[in-house]
Image (cartoon, rainbow, N blue to C red; front, side, top):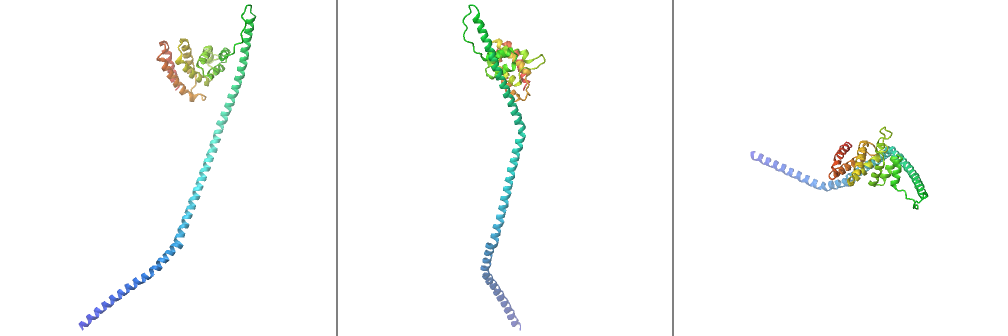
Amino acid sequence: LGGEGNKQGKLAKSLERHAKESAERAAKEAVAGMKPAIMNSLHQTMREVVVPAYESATRQMFEQTSSTLEQGLAQISLNQANNAANASSSMAPTLQAMSAQMMKMSESIQSLNMEVVQLRSAVNSVSVQNQNASAQQPGGAPAGPPRPVGIRDEVTALCHSRRYEEAFTKAVSASDGDLVLFACKNADAGAVFNSNGEGVISISQPILICLMQQLGAVLISAEDAGDVRVILNWLQEIAVTIDPTNVNIQRHVGSVVQQLLANINSKMSSCDPAFRRPLQMLIQILRGLL
C-alpha cells in the first residue's frame, strides 16, 4: 500500500508539471499568434488617430502663435504711430515759435538792408556835396571821382548816430576782427553799456557774445598798447553785462568763455607787464560766467 501511494504521488506531480508546461507553451503560442495583429492595430492607430491628432494640435498651436504675434506687431505699430503723432503735436508749439522768430529775424534783416541803402545814399550825397564844394574853391585841385562808401564808413556813420546795434551787427557779420576793433574805437562804450543813464544796454545779447568771441581772437595778435587797452576795456564791460542764462546765447557762452580764457592765458605769457593785472581781473570775472 505504501509503494502504491508513492507512485500515485509521483504521477500527480508529473501530470501537474506537464499541465503547467502545456499551459505556458499554449500561452506563448497564443501571444506569438496575437503579436502581429496587435502591432498592425497599433500601427493603424498611430497612422489614423495619433499622428493626425498631433498634426492638428500642432497646426492649431502654430496658428494661435502666428495670430498672437501678428496682433502684437500690429499693436506695436499702432503705439509707434501714436507716439509719433503725440511727439509731432508736442513739437508744434516749438515749431510755431521758431517760425515766428524766423519771421521777425527776416523783417529785421529787411529793415536793416533798407536802412543801409538809405545810409549809403546819405553818405554818397554828403561826399558829392563835399566834392562840389572843393571844386568851387578858388585854386582848388580838380575833383576826382567820388570815393566809394566802404563798410568802415557805414560803421562810423552808424556809431556817430548812436545806432550801435546796427553798427556792431555789421561789424561782427564781416567776421573781421580789425573791423570789430575799429567799431569799438568809434563807439562810446559808456553810451553802449549805460544807455539813457539807466543801465540799459544798446546792443543785444547775441551781438555781445559775438563781440566777446572776436575781440578775444584779436587780443592775441594785438601789439599796440592803445589797441590792447581798448580790447580789455570792452571785454570787461561785456563780461559784467552779458547774461549767460539768456536763451539766445546760453548754449554758446561756455565754449566762448573757455576759448577767451585760453587766449588771455596765452597773451599773459608775452604781454606788457602793465596789462597783467587787468588780464587777471578779467579772468576772475569770466570764471563767474561758467
